[in-house]
Figure 1 (cartoon, one colour):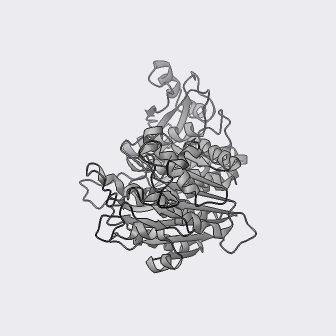
Figure 2 (spheres, helix red, strand yellow):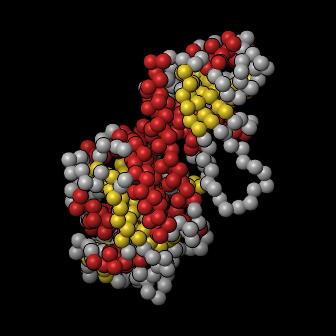
Figure 3 (tube, helix red, strand yellow):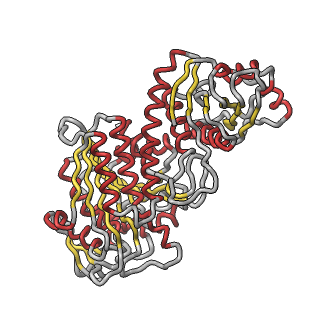
Length: 497
């Protein structure tokens, strides 16, 4: 879809569909909506007076100008209540409007920047939010199936602004929003792909494409590469895998030692059967999303490349299947991670923390200012925080925690801080190794976090994104299936570093 900026009054924009907005408490529209209302002879005011247009969030009224202006139709999107209106309100409004436009068969759409007028939100941020939500609401996974009818596709989308002084900020917001949406769409695609397609090899191919497109350094290690680096935890999980494991490292500004270094680590279990500790068969198909952390890291790194952020950013994705096999690792095995710590295997279904362990050790060589790992790690996190609600945040550095929480607030990819109590560490004490890989069912989200802490010696945050990477209920700009959770959060964090 072609994205542009138009310097003109909204009523003069050349498009088949125009989008304006309305707060819930407005009886006489002002700003761009008021100008359009005047051009339409008070048609919007008449709808408000009749009660057919209330401005409630999610509501989209449709008007047909009948030649009064160049456009074929006008959509008036409800902003909801004025009090507390924020960037998430902008995203919801833009998503509702563009979804309705597509339903109506629109091809060329022009919209004002929601929130940049009477709501007084920062112009660039509002333009970014409109662009992000518009593109993400239109996202569809290109599934390999026959279609009975042609897809309804919007060909162009323009942000319209009359005030020339705002155009530079709108241009910046559009560019950032487009890049963030592209990274999020990549993460969604990877999660939505069937596990026989989104293999470790496929993820490595995607990483190579990103590296080539944006001039990044890349390393893709296999079994022998990992063995040379004594990655016993990563290799243990990969023992029973039919697909070849891949340890992926992407480096943006990898040779720039003068820049702050941030490392992003994503769990890349491309399909998780549980291994010998096999999962129930019911809903096992959802385990194709167990590489949601790796998908988010690859998506974020793509956006980093598109924006050319002035940081040294390293993306690490340890990728493998977790399968039951004669060669698979077993409960009661004792393995050794790359930092020399030994681990007693209690459950082979607690595999994500094992691949992350070696990745976190590997991250230390970059002398990072911060390391953030993302993983669909525990069902306990979903029990604690709910499905489609928030990810858990564990952090050993208060400043890093606060930066992540601020990014979460701005993007509405919500995080909830949880503690790293020593009680959790005692629950993974082992009689035959330095630690166990599971402390049992109770407190599983906390015991997994303190397990990972054993492999860090730098400012570190762990995001348990279980319950967030895949959704069964589409809403707004988040469709059913892969959500791309974490990309927008990470990019916002990095841009504000």
